[in-house]
Image 1 (cartoon, rainbow, N blue to C red):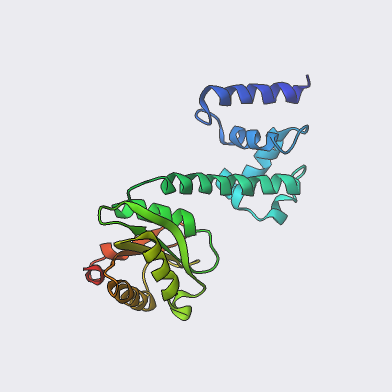
Image 2: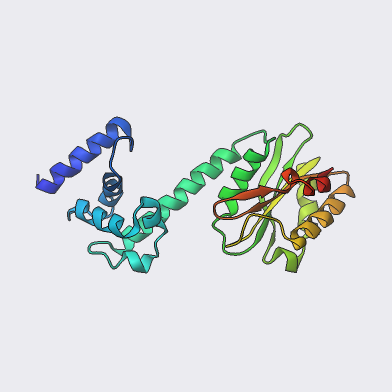
Length: 229
């Protein structure tokens, strides 16, 4: 066993005892690097990555072409970072999907942010519910592109409502690179959707605006909450 093998064994043992709790930032990154860099000293590589990017989150967000400039960091390692990031999002989304009831803005906001925040194009998504807040269908894309430009896909929305036998609907769309606050177009689209749903006796419960790190519940904003009465 070489010197690096002994070091890896010790770091793994620390992780086995308590996970990432108690580990230094560079040790956490080392463990990830073990799975794609079999032999070289990952301690030094982890330190160099953190010197540049400061946090593991920033390392995972870094472009592949930048990461590949570091010694021993190959395409395989760069995409391992991306896969871990996507897996973490998938884990949280599927935990939300498993909920049988969603009733408060925080539950909807978290679900929509996890589902939409990383999208580079505008998407509109819907969750359908019964009158008790029981989820009938969730995470369904009903429009894609510039929401204000392409309008609402009324047919897709109605098919979703009828298929799920919903009595209430919560919608959301993302603002790539912008603030999580509704525009005039968003307000107008909300009115249109409310009218479409009301025509078949379904209530529009809320409309969320989502960005990479924030969300806004229109039904919780003074003045806009009247749209949902």
